[in-house]
Image (tube, rainbow over all chains, first blue to last red; front, top):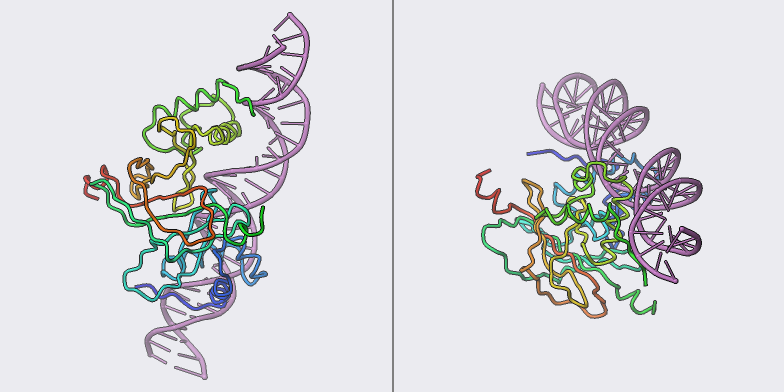
Length: 130
Length: 130
DNA sequence: AAAATTAACGCAACAATGTTGCAATTGATT
DNA sequence: AATCAATTGCAACATTGTTGCGTTAATTTT
């Protein structure tokens, strides 16, 4: 339908995701890009990548929004039903690909998407006795 | 420890929550309050109410933040482990008190809080064929 | 390989949301 | 009634996200 182009800015953003093990906010991406492109462009690239199903959006308990690359095998129908972990100490958000919640819904609801975010202490911060 | 006071502004905010069946954003509360108090005051009241465990904060997939009154019986230790439903059509967020996800966590994580938000169509919007 | 098409960009300006400092007010306590 | 500190209003600021528009550049077509 659409024709998404491979621009230098988009490539740069994707490289940042490639390097990062954790989810990134718009601001964090901007810092790593070092003026490769405008702030607005990053917003637009993120929107496009979400639409193209290359990254997904995660909204944290504290209201911050982050993005992470989808590193699943290319499925035809793609639902981000895995959990995310948000560390209260280092504020890193990581995908817990293996954690998939099971639940029972009341009737008459149509569920399209789920957001399952757990927060607490990540292994790194848990072991460095806070 | 602290001494939270019962002010007119706080009472007004609580009345708004009492009347509402759905979760409310700061803006929605402000509109219903009709200049009872300043915009900043509402932010501070919400912070206090969350701290006092009277309301809880819900952050939606789209990044919007809402608050809802906790209408559970007064438990000593209080974890908001129920789900929330966010309608993509009417944008209302409701608590699904009965829906509690079960999941298995990897070791070395300490989970303090969970945020389980489902989005799609609520019964009201589902039945009014969109 | 050049021309044509249009997605993507930069810039500026704006809108929404949340935060902070400080003096004045007011609820609770003595 | 006097005291104390939590709460408020105001102003100013910070952050985050959006929009319009003329220009640039990635693809496609010729």
